[in-house]
Amino acid sequence: MLPTYRFIAVEGNIGAGKTTLCERMAARFGCALILEQFTDNPFLPFFYEHPERYAFPVELFFMTERHKQLLEHFAEPDLFRSLTVADYFFVKTLLFAKNNLSGEEFRLFRRLFRVLNASFPKPDLLLYLHRPVSVLQHQIKHRARDMEQRIPDDYLEGLQRVYLDHFKKETETPVVVLELEDADFVRQPAVFEAIMGLLERPFEAGVQYVSLAEIGVR
Image (cartoon, rainbow, N blue to C red; front, top):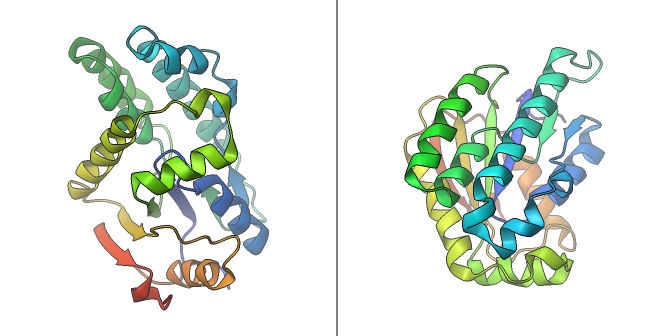
């Protein structure tokens, strides 16, 4: 059964498993899939080495590429597919910038963001995969991307706070914060099936917090 939503964005901190979940959802539903092409950002390796120097160009590149990708997709929707799944939502652009940029840089960036953000639809549902930083670090090390191996805990904690603070102010989009702990929806089919069942529920606008126990995973 297809979810009741037309556009689902899956979000989470670095290493939360959002891309893997989106790929499994696309395989299950045969839906359109939008994956962020983060490896195409030429500034990203330099940012991890010198974040103060490269924060603005890395965020500007991400914003323009995300905008282009979403604009192209929604300009010519696939009429044979009723669902789109993406492993990011465009507001992520602003949240990362808020965490990474200085005051003046962020104010300039926010002005650019507001112009671009009006170009395409917002998600009908945002699913946020919440995991402890210790689990994120374990998964980051397991996937072994060289440029990510020295990400400090406080950077991941900062991103987590920015996301959760934003969700508290969300009034237009339903946001489900799913507490996954160290659950593995690849090796534990029951976890994946429970998440799929969650997507069939109607949610009101605003943030809702859900645990695995609440969706039947013990």
